[in-house]
Image (cartoon, rainbow, N blue to C red; front, side):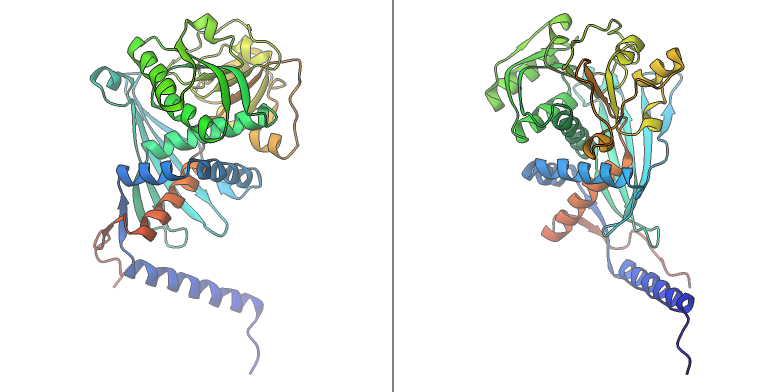
Length: 359
């Protein structure tokens, strides 16, 4: 009897793998992980989110991800509103594919609702079948906060003390970023908060003081812009900080992506999460490249900074502009899903895929 060829062995192995995946699909229920469970698991270990995000960025840099462009559903009668689809896929030992579907309706805050709501669908990479749906607004906020703090770590040369940190925009994302800084061991002499919605500014000031015992106070915009670390977490549709007022060594976390004018971008170090993704949708870096027809002021990506491929010039302010990659949601969401299933808090839906057999 002749030994099977290498191609034949590979085909048999793939067939066996798909058969096992199909059998697992037949036996395993589709699961729903609700917002209360997600919030509890994320709060139990915030630093795990930073580890998830760092691993996802490095995998993305190494080419072990698929992260297509986000798709924006917009409404002509309500141009401030949008719903965004972020498909992505992670390979490796814990491979997973999926999509986040996240809405942003800024007027929600006028009725006491949060601006954003989201769900995350996880798909089996072998069969394509979805196996979980997670409430994802908090996953999205936590991965955004983890990305911001990870960027600050590397751009501040791993020094976790700043004299003054300012938040421009005082919503749920700003609160989550502040909490993540504290969880990561950062200390601040003072916190300034600016928001056009005074009640929101007061709420974040109170949160910083009561929960974290931080010296916090509301401030005007010019004062906030001079802080050592400035966090932009607004819903601004276009730039309003137009003059390059920032000093060398100052760190700007451009989380909301559209607050800074082209001249500000052009005179700073610019670290992005993914260059091609970020140079779209009229973000501040996109507008700067359009105006100057040049990319020389784009320093590189956060993964490139982490791996020593790029460096920051000490004679400029530094800006981190993360567009937000779907692979980050997958990395955090998959961990939360596994934890929820392991502890029995994920809600099974045994017949979600009724008649999954072909015949």
